[in-house]
Length: 217
Figure 1 (tube, one colour):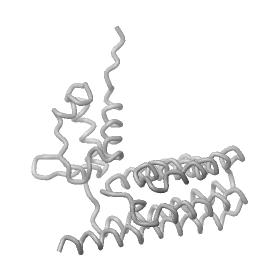
Figure 2: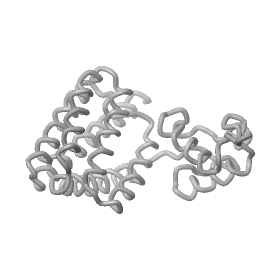
Figure 3: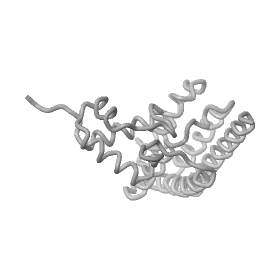
């Protein structure tokens, strides 16, 4: 009989997916035995997956326990700076290298996402797919790899900026400007539009964080 249990690679991927989906949120404790039972694997691949995630900064130590890491204000600012630079480059390269079919996929995504504007969680998932498509359209595997790392760290944010009132519609308008520039082969415009998009997202997140601090007083 073929062994269909998750492999070590699957254990890592499934834990990472659980963090990305919000099943495990910043501050949540990850228990090796509980994860092994949930994933249906022995504790060894889970232990190795947890060690790998700790090395990558996705998990951190709280005493002897491993918890999902969180980002402080400085780390958040650093992440958005790097994201803006790399995403802008991806858009610039996509304007140069994207095939007509890839642009069509971006346009189809944009139209489909309009129906999700009042569902922040679904729109956040669609937003990740949209950005990933731009990364792929850059046709630069090294850039895609670095952006995967950046977006993996974005999973450490406890909420999506798309949940802010009006942000969903604003984000889709910004997506439309990005796609238009890519379709026109305007590298400078695509770079600028995507950097502006990331900047608006960062401002929104800072405002949300400030509101949380104020509400906690």
